[in-house]
Figure (tube, rainbow, N blue to C red):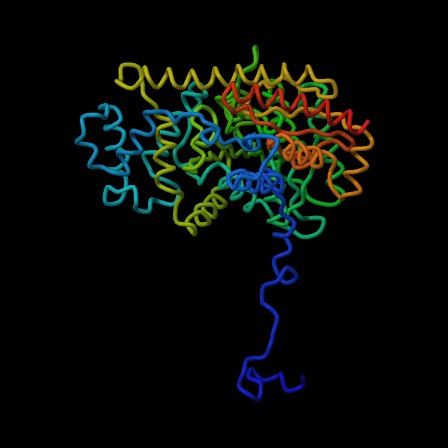
Length: 496
């Protein structure tokens, strides 16, 4: 209609226009984001749970979610001391209650005194509560056996994810061939690929070696870097240690090699160390990138730029919902650091309860304090149960023909390789599905077990995997593993 140029049509009604925001007009980078850990399989699992509640008959009683590292949702109990202090911080009148131990009260008072108006409901400084950052720095110093940590290099974050995205945001620049390339391990935790897509950076894959227990080869880093330099500017190297989804723990030597590589190639290092207490295998030990960097001497420790991340969500805490975390930045250009501080101040501050909880993780009950014994018992029980479940998972999966599982050295996941019959692969492709997505969807529909397909994390062409958490209680985990075994055998028969 040629009269539509005015805002009103003749009869005074507004013209018919399409929506301003449509899939065609929206931010294209957002459309490229993919986050498998909460993808279509999980959405279907939620639907199935609803159906079961409504009395729909299924070949199983309940959905077992082994798709996400959410410890409390899987039945792990919170650490008593942490929740006591959180209760006191949230409702300070309880400080007069004699049910709470003195050390819990002291921690709560100290945290509240550092909050505006003595309330955990007040905004904090953007970098995070001052005394919490000091406690984090002291924790890092103890963990790294005396290597100094400056509270001014500590930023408290909304879970580790927030810190990781913030650093990637600072690093992303350039156009075309100068666009920032971010090197990530394949398989990787999809936060990385999703954030890279959202920021419009370039994803640069390097493959872990499945044959050698998902280890990292420098020659593979070199290959990946050379290839990427043809089309972008790779300037960041991301490492997840202990590994997610692959559960490997890096040796000290490997970390040293990676640092040397980053120094030689002038790469910014990001070390995701949220599973640092989750180490189970004999002969494996957690080494922080910061510690190894400083032990390598000033030639490296004064030069290599490093951001490392930790969180309240994993380890023995499992307090995902509080969204607590921190990052430590090393050798960051002072002018960039000022920009980082500006950037985090736009979002005001991380949640104060998450900061308080992070403080308790880095400043837990000490020998001689009333809560120490209970705390140590709870912590040890959780970690040794996880170690047992890591072994159990690997052992049982390896008894199934067509499934091979590397040792779960650390973290909370196994990432077994599955052999799928040709017919199943073809049927999946005909449906436009990744073969392991097809497998996991069938597994869910027939057994109620919810896993994430390997294709959501990345894998070598022609190989198929799934990620499964080791978090369910031992009895549930046994049921899950046996059902899985049965399903795999049936599936293989059906499609061979």
